[in-house]
Amino acid sequence: MVVDKAPIAGLKDKAVIWTKPDVRVEIEYRGVTSDRSLGHAAFKRRSRRLAQHK
Image 1: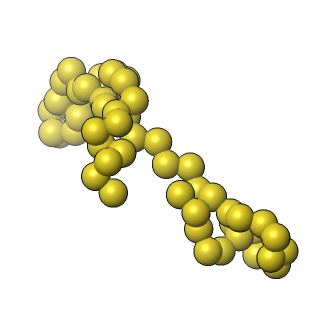
Image 2: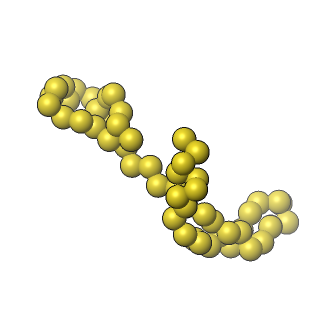
């Protein structure tokens, strides 16, 4: 993903293309705590399907 601004203030090189990483993954939650927070997160896989929803 190309971004317009440098991630650090004061950098003004016109020959540079700044990018921002964008990784979409699927996470599975195996439990809910007593205060209703999701717990026991587990990485399932990188998701091409989610990346297409931009």
